[in-house]
Image (cartoon, rainbow, N blue to C red; front, side, top):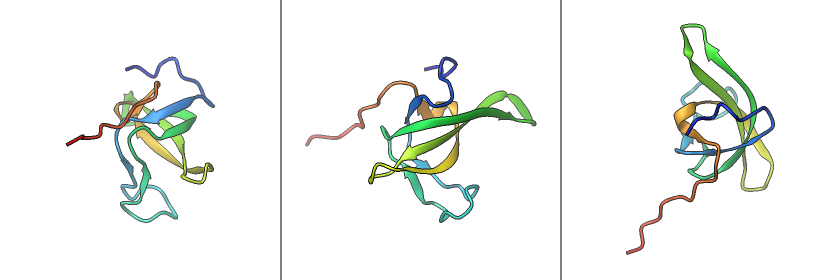
Length: 91
């Protein structure tokens, strides 16, 4: 799903588990910032100089206490503009 119509301040949702790859300062490496379905707020968009065709999204995800976490850079495929219900296996 395209995120072309979302704007700064809009809600977005984690489509995958968002984990620190070491690029977020003051956070533990492999710290989980968002599970699938977690709502976040789009702060800004941009792209890497090396790959101007790939858009980057700066997002702060909601923490369990309701506050927003640190800004995290995400790729388009890691986000959704619509709420995602996490898959749960009923067995």
